[in-house]
Image (cartoon, rainbow, N blue to C red; front, side, top):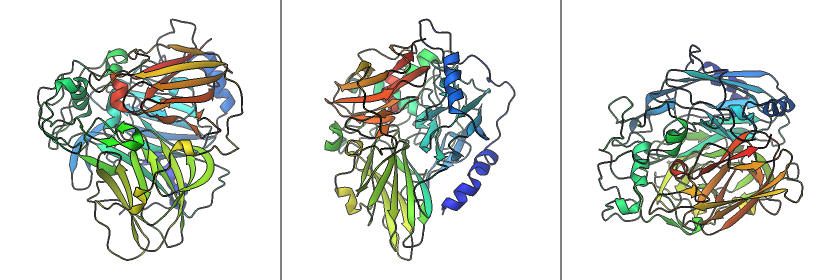
Length: 552
């Protein structure tokens, strides 16, 4: 049983993150190498003087050093052991916790059989540290290391993961918590709850094999007679003719394959994914809340903090304790509907930024989204259930404040029956509300493609690493997402936060429903080249990514 108290986190967070992680080797470091190829247009280079000037304005307080090693490993998910890739030997990776104003210095040692990177999801940081291979840096080669160093300016709940192929859908992710030195909230305990959908290492499956199967499109599959969106019928003969866009366009030094991992063998590189894994293409998963189709992938497991519902993590508290819960959706293809049985939650933040407080029975989190809530806990044992929206499965953790039997693994608290709170119903706290201003520039991003051909793209164009949309420093920019597809997409902007309409919350990731239009505004105050993409890892790697650049 693992429990976390606020006192323990504040007292030992940095020491644990820096001292207990596997040490990274410094020999052969990629540090100091050019962040990316020199620009071929008039856009700002990721390591240009404009980027350095913006970083200088953020200042830089005490340096917090952390060592990370990305490595093949075996993980116990709670009754199921899998071979995968992770940061050390735990899932999620060990939390990094700093204070706003600190300088974070992370050495990443790559012990994987292919290149990797680190993307700091949600942070407005210097461009050459953003971790997007081919855009802001060269990939960190197998056996090499890279030093990330940047000022952390804004408090909030964030996380980090690779931006290399489908690696995010393995075990390569961890929370990044930035403490507010003037924290306005009062609470007794704090819990970080990371949600995930899991396929890697289960019956021979790997994320690259899943992508290869999906890339065939619906026309290339024999789906069998599966019902309820849980068709796991066998299918062989995966090929890599549709290898990830990132792998093809920005990782020319890597091999084209991924691991053929299983529960009994260590991960190793191969030219093609294992053909022995069952079909993971999901059919019939629907959600009116998401506008229809709920997802592409039938995951065998759904996790809270790396544990299956059969062996869940248990949080402990005393009745009456006021608890802050930081939710992170680290999934690859799944929105989660989250509720704490017997309790209402008070939403205080989304994507790191405060909102006007609002109570909710349940929350909806798309991939990449984060929510902070406060809960005054009652006496007993309660399920913290994360329902895989539209997929009829769930993840589970437990809250125990007293005696009593634990609920069953498939428990569905009544709070899940209520319409979950979504970001469009929140308003930004006045302290972070974006000032009213007419946009200087409007960029329309049409989301295109279909499940039939698996040809996801933006404006009908597959991803390419060069900037396609240019803005000027100081401009108010309006991004208009127009979803021309029959599927929902959680759209993520690197290096900035945008405001939802009507003094809506400040966010970096927002759900765009099928057939709908969403206009968001941001201030162009962080020069460089920044990715905009769907945070469904399979949609992104199929081509639903683009790059925004700043004019020199």
